[in-house]
Length: 271
Image (tube, rainbow, N blue to C red; front, top):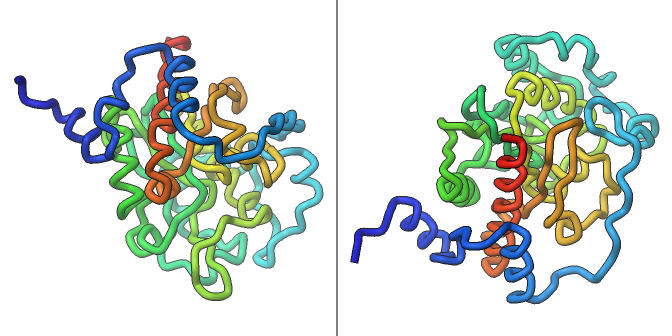
């Protein structure tokens, strides 16, 4: 028997083994994975995405969300002209929302700045806040293994960022999803990252990233968003589970792989 490849070793470590091999079209792989596991959400139609602005936020949300305590949201027209150094400096010194008051470090993003793949999560957690890097700790290791199974890495053809650049916490100091005004304040930074990188495909990691990128209602379940190709501007966008969720729900890993297969199909179609 031949020695397992590095990719196969990573898949075994993820607890997936051969399940993560793309042996059939992405749609068929997803169907098989869904049939093999119980549904997590009640059947419901995905609501039609509302009209969105250039930052990918629904126009209705953009006009109704109150301004954060730190002042008006960043001027998107100014952010849209920034180069990488200017953008990173702007994020490091940003005080446009309340999240700046408790952060240790801003978490700008990491990866290949000419990547064809961009993965977007919701925001930094405790480890990310300390290190200033996205997706570290167990969830970060799982994401790295997912990238490796796709032939990608943080250094090669993949870039990782979050909707917000500072850690959102509740009154007890625990992680929470970013509030709409916090996401609105940070969205021009993410939009500019996307424009500078010019990726071929976007992958939203979890509900929060999907909601703010696509301008969907906040209660949109990932289970009803995955398995289809959306568009952010003219870029195909695929939604899958957040790695932290997959660590809690190991049986959902095969569904996440089906999502990544769908993303690879979209990538091949644009190639």
